[in-house]
Image (cartoon, rainbow, N blue to C red; front, side, top):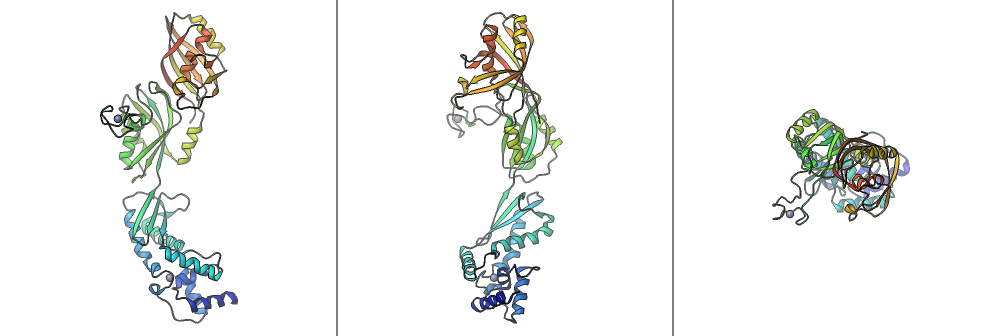
Length: 404
Ligand SMILES: [Zn+2]
Ligand SMILES: [Zn+2]
């Protein structure tokens, strides 16, 4: 240590009673190896001072450093019901200790001293790592345990568990996500039969039920890559989703088993496939992804349809750009603007009288019902106009979503 710093250290011990940890922490940059306590002891010996201050007599920490094993025990106890591999310790320190610390730094003009909080967090982590067989992970811990040192209370922040998958919807009338009763807003009333829900079940609930059971999570959140209409089926390879399980106690669940168990209970309503563990980042990816959709459309016209005419019109639609003004049915919740979308492919399957069945491959975000009806000419060009007969969608199913 430089003579000047040594002098500063001597002056400091003269003015304050500091335990070796609190003393060493102030000069952590001056000595490379060892704990703060070892550093403090070494500087003290260089100064030929034998009067070691016990931590409970320390002006700064008032014995807090001695409580590290105690805090460690409290945290170990709090996390024992959780399955995890990585963790991080945080702490709340009495304000008066933190104020004293800041005063001391200012007085000594120290710019890079370590806060006591950091020492406590790190030392607890160092004890817990071998004891629990887990690893401290600063950017992405699965569990963050924060000990309030004044009250001996731990609060745990458990990182959500994310599961990617694809769902098929095999029954009409099921919305994708929870839809609270509009009258009571979810509290439960006569109108909704005290369920708080507008629909009996949702894709979200069906998909999440077993996952919540297996992970012992408290809540879930369902993130789909777009959504189909409530009355539309979702077929083909299914629609990508990420299921977020909040506060899971068990993380290493058997995904093939979850898939099997879920599909057993959601039979004929929803089916899930392709499950794998995911991350929060993937939610943004699948939300932003512009997957092409293939629809099976059953349309109903006001007069008998001519198959040849329909096929001719379908041919002109390959790669056609259409313009859609926000549909009347969603105008209350969407900005009123013109969206340009591409129809990639249109194939006429069957025509019988006023009913025709076709498959339609479109760009993500196309309003298919409006493309068929024209929506009072808000969509142009539209199918009704092109074939010269007003028609509307009778049934609409998503038969494929392209992309992972
Ligand atoms: Zn101290
Ligand atoms: Zn209600």
